[in-house]
Image 1 (cartoon, rainbow, N blue to C red):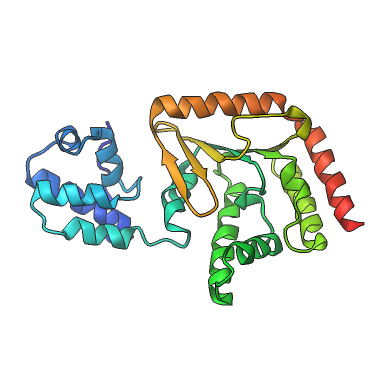
Image 2 (tube, rainbow, N blue to C red; image 1 turned 135 degrees about the vertical axis):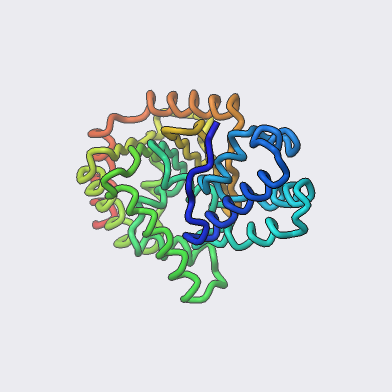
Length: 276
């Protein structure tokens, strides 16, 4: 079971939350397991909160406050700790990306965020947030481009992306934007040895992930999780049996996708079509 590490409680809001949860739990003379049993989760999960390895949850913070007699202390800290540059529904997954040993994404209609160019991300954001100000669009795009640094970090995760051929054929922005973006995708895959891109061609037919963006993350010190996303909402999945179902479906997609070299050749060809 994870043991609380020596956190600097003032390093950030999440560390302060973790240190306060630990302080309150120990003052109540409860172990991580005992507290977990009372809020219907594992002691391991409590340990991840206390180590600031997982973002706090509002509903669990409410339960902690009730059990530990801390008023609304942890609920207020939770709101502070969950402030994020990315959409609220993606915040937990964005934090987990930074700790992941490997990330395997499937994208049915759009290229994954960490592989997007600024122009592509801007066109996409303007299309989905039609009433957004220029400042809000820039904030969203900048946060997305920051995530791309995962690919160039020395200790970054292995990254595997399976992209449906449809994502190559749907123009985002003008033809030049899409063409340059696909060229960037090829160059990024070739520049990073730990980044693999495959295309699931139209000829592969039906697949369980056909209309679902999915990201499978594995860690050195925690169970794997899956993040799925639709147009305006996302969900983090941690149930072991369901995560295994996603794993099996992803392995099937990898098996029927084009090889990495054939995939990059197809992407480069699609980029030239937009140039013409």
